[in-house]
Image (cartoon, rainbow, N blue to C red; front, side, top):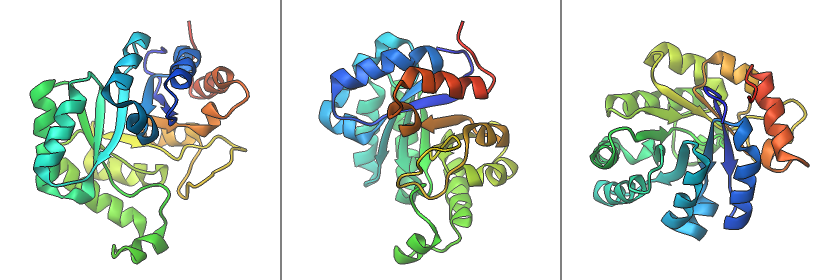
Length: 235
């Protein structure tokens, strides 16, 4: 692990053995691990526990969205595994987010709870289709403001909203940014993307990077190059 490195590698696979091997290869060059729904659905809490040996913070990308009591129970169970960050959907509303916050803090006050604003795979036309008001940046700000009011630690947003959220919500609010694509990378199903150095300089707290690392011929080298581009190096 590189102290202060904002890169969290996205481990989105149902294969526990492969996930652990990948984490072992990249852990000297990243600041944390983001474990997605594919892995969580296949491996559950015991799978999450297996990452403890790497000594890295783990972001459980749970994206809970349900009635407050159900979300509270799910967050409580996830926090008990020892992860550092848990997320819910801000669209679940204030009562749900507050229940998630209280549940996590009852297990471990250090556990950070953040909220998903608008998925980085969505554009303005997608918001219209689901009855939300574009542009996406305005919807992100609305949901991020609500998230802060509910006492959560931060939000998931695209890199394009970083500057606006920093100005509105202050320097200590956690901004976790997926959709990070180094120059030349395939954007895949992402719509609102940005390069790692540009996003970090804009004020991102955590850069979630998946396929540019995990699908590279050598994930360790790919992670190392991204870390170096941000001014971090192992050793």
